[in-house]
Image (cartoon, rainbow over all chains, first blue to last red; front, side):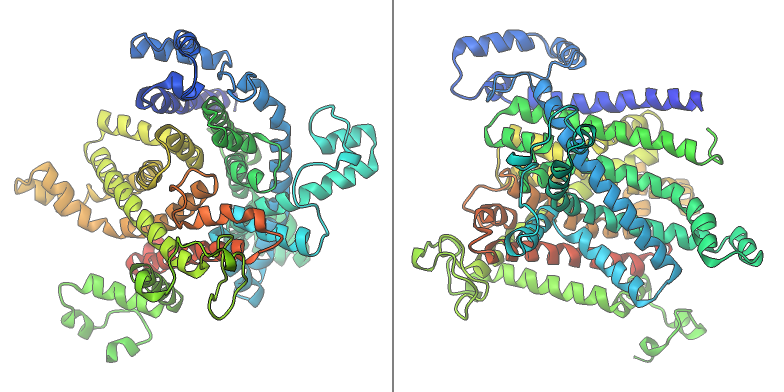
Length: 333
Length: 299
């Protein structure tokens, strides 16, 4: 296991290097004038010269690449044009919001998706199964940002049950300790703030989750269908175990292992998809930060944000791979 | 006619003797035709394509003409889907938007499928260091979440239809490349490849004249599915303000443009999304139908 973990960690290095390299090729080689791209067209000649010096733009390409890699390794993602703060610091400040939303929606997606998947598999070809199949396909086809607006229209504008956008109520703002508001509310024991925070999280959480529900459901259904036909399930039934015990304890437990991979992939996808959903719900996370960067023509932000989120998605997949090995004792590397 | 009424798919002696050389595609069409959902999807897409092509004649309105007196009007007889904040007919704009979405979808998928096929087939046929290098490059692109890569691409090259097509095409090359690579790997071990080599065919001829026609089915299925992905990507880029230049009628841009009016005129934000979802759904259903028809093993 340790050997596999180390091997897998080493394999992630070229992938991350690849991501960093693609950004380098696009931003430095294809861009006609990187200094002005990062500083804006109206930047003064001195500032452009200073940045040119800092990035080593007058050096040969390979040397630029070395300088660039060194800066990335030390976490120097550049300075935001808009706020004049280091990009990495700003991203780290917004990361808890994005992680909190991603975890929350993946939790909804996993619980609802697995439940529906099991029900569909047990009652294969029933009307419920058909509805879920069609619903899953429709869910995958809808643009998530549009779905977000529709949810907002229904539950915030028309029914007025939930707040339309943002992350907290100014009157019930949780005290910031970790940046994860739910955790902060629990630490401080602030009940009203916890309820309010959860309310703000429901719409964006569900909007993101609906896509995941579709894929997790379909995957659970197909692995469950496969598992139900195994010999050990027949044995369990023959022993006289109750149907519920057979399905949940014997079938689901084994069927879930491959589902973990899908959940992990969804989690990685949620980070990149945050660009869209956070914009819809004005959620103050990394995705919204990147889009604000686009609107302000703040390319250091766009570049740094996209790159960091891409690296996180890769690491997420790595984590799932490792988890997969621990969960399934049959997998020996 | 009698043949189509047969319930089973097994070939009888008559079928075998009657089958013409083109029977693979004929069979596929027969299987496809039986799948009613896929046929409906194809009809809807055909109507949408016709609507997009003949948009100029189908509607009395101009998609760019501002009529402030009708701004934000809801659906009515004169404007079935209502008007936007500048009084432009939404149905007209959706039809013109279909032109952009469909053509960006088709062109970018053609580019990515063509390049992906060439890369995949070379990679699998030659193996060794060619395969190693090409596969690593594909892995690099694939590990980059496509929407983020497209964002960086558009922010470097600026918005516009051409750049959007290139960005969407580039990020989707690894998909077909991977599929073609694995199909070629199994196809190149076939006897017909060995015999083609024995009669002295060149490598290029073997790759494109012998192997390629035999692995067309997964390519076509993948391409159909990719169109829906491309349309969604274009809409997402448009929504983020990185797609086509405004005021071009494009679905994602229309959606993002009308979000400020979600309280006062919700129909403005509703219909572009329905158009996107319907088109994407139809391409997915069509792809499912084609997969079942062309290659039942893939099911």
